[in-house]
Length: 411
Image (cartoon, helix red, strand yellow):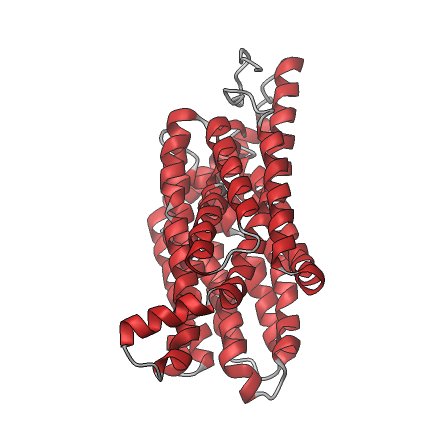
């Protein structure tokens, strides 16, 4: 259910993107760009409310907060489906963002409660989230065609509310136990750590948050811009593939856009599977070697991308997307290993406030860079970002400091 929750979390945040593009701008006679403005507060809420959600989970109950997530995001989505004006739909999207913010700090804190195979469990959970991103347009488009845009909000909302009821029935005893344990934890004295251990925890924490910010720039830039990059650089490849599959030259112009979208989906889907490999490697080798390898991989492929077109550009794009998706679980893995159990959800909350705030800032950056210099300059900037990650990760210790561990090799 936590994996399905991650899928739904990203699905709900992207329903409106397809609804605005395919239905609302025609039905309401409002421009697409103007409609997107009403979605912006929801994306800020998605990041900013992660911290209070994590705090409530630590102080009250993580499983209880997951019930609030399923029910709250579901009810908000259903109500958004009954909107009559852009302002009403903007308020609905803001509410969706507030409840959707619960998932990452709380769900990941539960996923990392048991330390065995932490990397693999985070990776599998991450793949479900990526599938939510990849499937949002497909599911929303289908519901628009078979019932209208309102159904695209209402049906997933009802499904999420039902899951919230099931989650509560399954976990109500654990919710009660968590409340009792939380009360006792407040009365327990925090473990005393040596100055050297605190210093090491601080150093690794700073690396986590720096790489979180820089990685978010890379992730948002690549996932947002890739369809447009393919549209500019793979028209010839897409036309050849359409002609090869259909054999009719008259179909080339009609289906080239579909083929370009399909090529982008293939890259996203294949690259998301990198998290499974990374999760296994994290459990075996730890984060330092794995993170440095992915940073080098991104540095190389971003540096190669300027000027490329066609099949070569497709292959290189797959290379840097494998790096971009592969690095997603690493910081979550490190937080899961280092943070004390009683504050872990709050630490995840801070991590996702940083990540999602950077995501919101990155979109204007992409627009300015593309308008003035084109995508080749963006690739060079992203190569520089990968180099910054490489330098930061080189400062990681070979073994992570654990919450109460004192004797750790610093180098």
